[in-house]
View 1 (cartoon, helix red, strand yellow):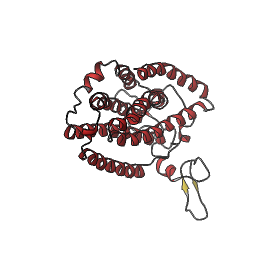
View 2: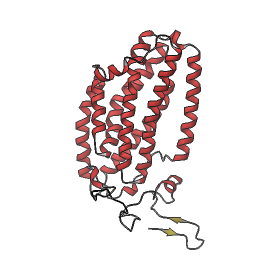
View 3: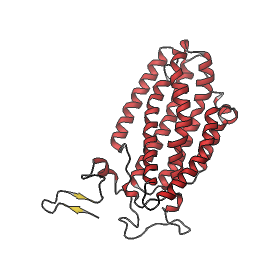
View 4: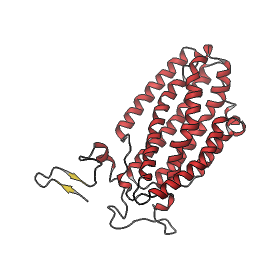
Length: 302
């Protein structure tokens, strides 16, 4: 379980690194969660009131012979993540403030202002917040520290994206004459354009399988629905309609989304190549893809 340089006693490792030497990411991430089959020799010290163990493998349809070998492909750690997020959010806040102060409303297409920013993009916080809640559940149930950290950062991204849109809404209300987001909630609840997306999101929140949540988000929902709406529709058409603000938010969102999708692909690869459970994992993933892809295609068309 541990190795030590017996000559100088300067090296100590409680895990098996992916390569010859442990990376800084591995040193700060691995071994932060303990389980009865790994480092927790006294069994679980706490249980639920009905006797259930606090963590169990049956909360997902997939299995791994060694969760400890999974690695976040981006090696995200808390300190650089927080520092980067602070820099980006501070820069974004300044940029949005300056853009709004320059009276961009006078140059904005009123149809874009009212129908896109006031109705559809203003409804997108519902999507981001629901994904945050789903990922927060996954963080609680997952049984490997590398995924716990990666999904914590991913859920934080989602709530940050949600708040960025709300921040934009408040700024537009204060600085752009005629802007209102009053149509956003009715559109989310009733419009033909967003109802299929709401169905997808409600099913995601209702899922009790953390791996399904992570894989479906990264492999199906974001590529088919998220990128279509945020990148192809809003970001690529904003400048043509005099909107200099929403692309600032979506630049960071797209970068985070690419990181989330890499994590999902790495997890899918880890599960599919498992020596013992690979075949059954592939079947489970295929079931999820078959279930979610038609719903997401319908949402994309809408």
